[in-house]
Length: 262
Image (cartoon, rainbow, N blue to C red; front, side):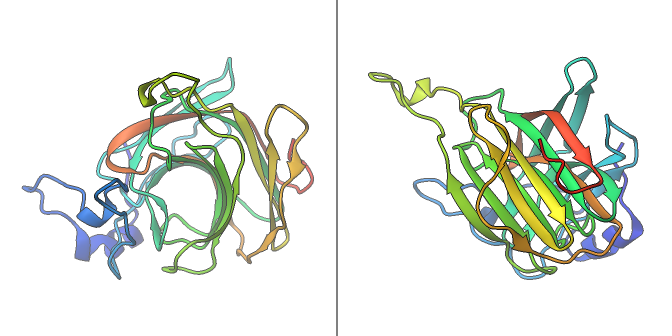
């Protein structure tokens, strides 16, 4: 069962839903479509994070950051080393996040990497499997992250301080396509990719393996200062505020040192 800390409850008082009301996703949180554009949340909108300190695999605990309308879940298979994360959540972007997060508290330098696959090949293209290093568990935390989108885009991003919009560098590598003569209902799965993030002091760097080659740095690093201890871990956001999807992250490397992404 996921529990709220007192500080998170205080942040949510102004936006909590009465017990008698059925939670519903606000219009601004609905994903983009031919008739709708997803936009940033209203100023001062926050939801409390729900947290469990029960360990899972190599991680100390897990959280529904931003308190998505449907509680997330995760499982770990020690035989395959796979973490299966199911989550709702409108985005990991803008001025606040909603996603399910498996985390460990750490300080100093960090190397984190994982293979990413999506069991459902027809999920929303902007869904994001993420590797995140963040200052706290609030929905607007200062953070650095790398993400693999459902459509194949990879990005390195940061929220430089609380309650400001994420800034990112985007790389479009591969993705999904239509086999010749097939309809959009026959989308082929994304080629599995491996992503990584390295924290060395205040420098955060994206690492990528596109087709199974050794991990290599991709693009320039970003600069961000985090005070230790901070949170390090893996997560998933389906880009859907009131529906769940699933990502699988495997072969996870997490070391309290730089230069260990592999």
